[in-house]
Image 1 (tube, rainbow, N blue to C red):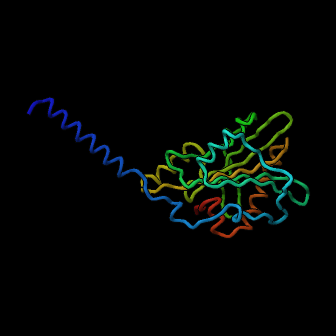
Image 2 (cartoon, one colour; image 1 turned 180 degrees about the horizontal axis):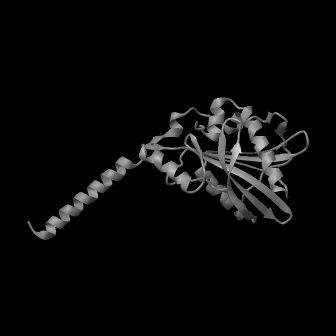
Image 3 (cartoon, rainbow, N blue to C red; image 1 turned 180 degrees about the vertical axis):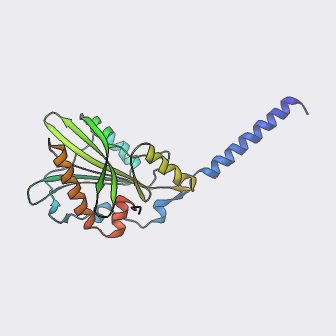
Length: 228
């Protein structure tokens, strides 16, 4: 057999093997399909503790182009503003995607706010004590003119909250290697304030009260399963 023919056969075998391996490692089981249906609008209570929805104020609205991108990524979104008895307001934004595989991903507030003309700074990892476990979060400070908005957000991949970036990708990879396409959640809370430390404390108080008012399945949807 000619050398060129042997080389061609070898290449063909390698290509077929590569295709077979790729297919074998491509996740096919969608976590979203295995879990019960839910609606963010019903899952998140409209009032809890000292907080209730304030219909007069809406969270940050995105431009049509950005909204079109979000519609491709997420299956459900929820935006509300809550007010407490002291008149303090917290803006809540939640986005759920049934496919957080390679072709999908969360739309981080750093990108979203910048696209709306904000300057975003002070991005730092943090920990939020929920009362049920400690949640890994990222905190930002966004400014646009006189508007100053401290932000706390977290991401879930499957049944675990994770920091955006490398940890998020590693979590997605773990699911992928097990043949599972994970779903995911991005939860953002913010308020208008020039005092970031006070704002973050108020946001933690809000999150704790919200989770306390939710049943266990809904809470798991929002923050994942805590270890330990």
